Amino acid sequence: MSETFTSVSQDEAGFRERTRLSFELDADICVIGAGLAGLSIALEAARLGASVVVLEGRHVGWNASGNQLGTVMPGFALPLTELIERIGLQHARELWALSKEGAEFVRANATEENIPGIAPSDGVLEVSNVDAGDRLISRLQMLNEDFDTEVEGWQVDRVSEALKTERYFHGVHYPRAFQVDGRKYVHGLAALARRAGARIFEDTPVVSIDHSGIRKRIVTPSARLRATHIVLAGNIHLGAPLRRLSETLLPVWRYAGITAPLGELLHEIIAFKGSVMDSDGVDHFRIVDGDRLMWESPETTWAVRPQRFAGSIKRRIRTIFPQLGNVEITETFGGATGQTVHGMPQIGQLRKGLWVASGFGRQGMNTSAMAGQLIVRSILWGDERWKLFSPFELVWAGGATGRVAGQLVGIWGRASSAAAGSLARYRERARVKDRKREARLAEANRAAGTGPRRPPPGVRPRPAPAPEHAAQDVKRAAEPAVQDEGVSQ
Image 1: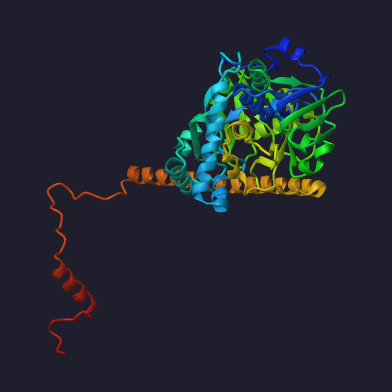
Image 2: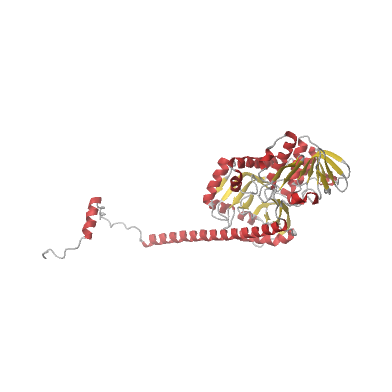
């Protein structure tokens, strides 16, 4: 089933009913922020019988949550090897298992019955920009044996069959990972939460929070709300009342573009039907609407109009797949994610009744769902697995200096990756040339008859000397030759 990105809502009438909070209200749980995390919390809480209210300063999914590619797979923004180095193998396994539960939460909700037009499809392929065959084997073994994750290693030739480009080498295929229409998912999640009993109010920014006492007080421009628990799920946009929390996140913008229809040529060049991402986190793309290409651009720590990235996206596509030519970008979109200094999400209780769910980075689909489950089940059931995230504390992200440093690190990382990729491709071309030269030389030798010669017909080949005779022959060859038998010594 093809996807369509012309509409962001499958239930427009429902969204018109979501108005600004204009009356006093009490609830068990108040969620601040109507992105992926906030709506996952609202849906889980409402399903488990709690009264829940969501306050959104703008509208549902207005930022990164409503403007992403919809790839769902286990893991975190922090690479797995670094996660193990920081907290150990057993602790890392427990966190990885939680990330898989988050992915399954999305899978259970993202069905055509729940969200018409969501168009789920399986398979995510992570390709390497350098020849990493040795590292690939150890990684596959670790994912299979230590983390119980179904993965397949793809050799270079198989990657080349699926993606007609010289830029990629080996690949790791996640057959259980999947993708959905990301922009429809966030609005479908809101519709599911509403049907479960959650109340969502848009255009309702939070002016102040009083988190003392059993019943917390939340003030908005037009009304007040009281709740036993408050969950801060507003990412970098929590605003003045929670400025210090917002400053623990580095804002990173990522923009995507969708091409005009490319016809059958697109399928000849890109035969893989799932999402593709490179190992350096620079390029992320997949086919949508049958014959259009959706491509995510490199990151930036400064906000700009999405249209300004159309040229950058076109250049990336032309660099990876020059056969497509100068494609036309018909739509651009994007938003800001909050990235923590340590690369792991912020999930847990700041103080009694005050919770945080943010900092998901580029792995927001599964980790935001996981956060919703952990927080709600702790509030309602006493489940304390959220404490597995305790080693990852709130760390100041450096303000404007941190953003400049983040931008420079990103530029340096992309430049280093490009240099390493160019060197790897040069070596691969040299190996191919050597193999071709050796093949031509062998063929020329065969044609010229310079290979091992057979004796003429009727002539028996001389047998090889026995080892002891061969030693005597060598000894005689080393002695001085006798000039003439008739000459005395």
